[in-house]
Image 1: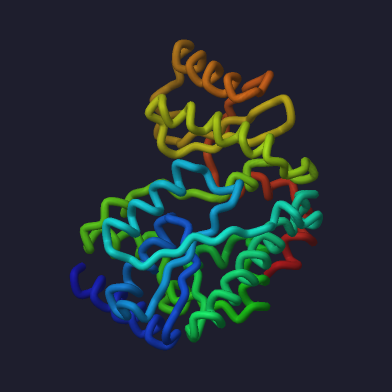
Image 2 (image 1 turned 90 degrees about the horizontal axis):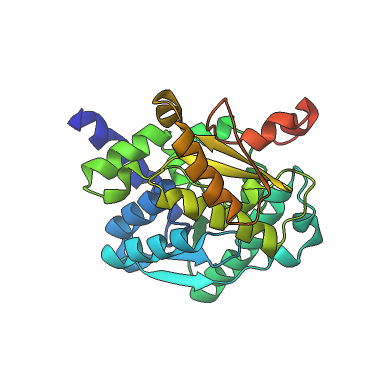
Length: 278
């Protein structure tokens, strides 16, 4: 196992070296956090992590991202992005992620040029390539590199490397931007993002770890990890969930019988839309 992890790390290190002096698009999630950690360990001041302070990034996740970088001495800069001002983003169609990442990489490219870095990198892994991710098209358009994917690392590989490095985030639940919780066709607005964030913070306060609150207007659809579903949701637990979510402004609360799954909002998209991004 140790030899296998060493080989994985060697492949990642080689991919990072090929990137040269690199700016890492950082969100605090396990993938971008481990990429930033590995790049700093390898390149020192030859890397810079940059995080976008956006309304679609939950405040708790932003604080955790800052804390991780500070704990490990990773150079970090916060920038502001303007995706909320893009109508193509706000209308929230199947290409929303493209417009978000296009804005992010435009800002990071300016940062790269002004600081004299060679490349911009982001935390795409090989598992991500199997999913519907229009943001990959934006990365390709901006010539953003993906060292984790280049090194053929899966999400499980990244977690294993983070655990071996002694990083507390190795088992951090997968996270995505708050906009991904809003049903396609419903506008991305500060208020809709706030409702999702407040509802999820309320569930987090109940001790829940892996879940999503999906915004369907007056109704919230709550996806809960299979482990918690398997233990059975008592009437009391359901009442706690309903109270926490209603407090965020939703009128109705539904628990999804199929549980949590990444990218659930994409299940309604026509096949043609999925194929266009692959």
